[in-house]
Length: 177
Ligand code: IMP
Ligand code: MG
Image 1: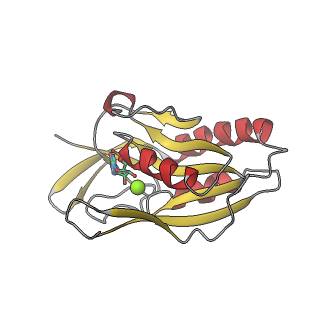
Image 2 (image 1 turned 180 degrees about the vertical axis):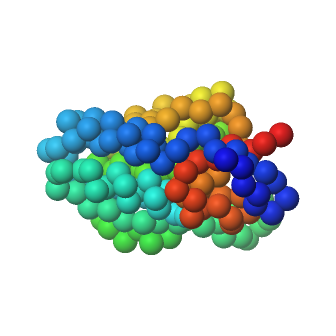
């Protein structure tokens, strides 16, 4: 199946059924690993909203979840941009935090999020991502939970967007060249 968003065409690449199967496997691993950790899940908006929702429904241990946005503010000089996690009001000291992301591409976003969580005293940080593009990775990090590894092509759907569009699609589509 093919769809058009703005000026680009996309083809169906991962149907909802397959996505949910892979998320179940991640949930199974978490239910095994984290049952006694009382973790705080931190889902990065906007892209992770569908993944977070479907994953959390399958988690069977006590936990908290918070939705945050990574915002960039202009500092005093143009090179001095300040990043902040907006919406994270929980006390992180001594906590196990599981970051929930839609996709790790270059790894820059994840690196920044980890830095910010560390600076607030988080004891242990785990990374859970729906999608991982190993061949695009440019930072030194290794996601702990990956639902699906994909090639280095632009995708949309299931929370991921092209210029704000496509987040509502229940399946994942790959850009058509
Ligand atoms: P990174 O900082 O390069 O790892 O990129 C992470 C962010 O870029 C993700 O949170 C997405 O918002 C966006 N992104 C990366 N690859 C894609 C893609 O294929 N489709 C849609 N958004 C993407
Ligand atoms: Mg994102």
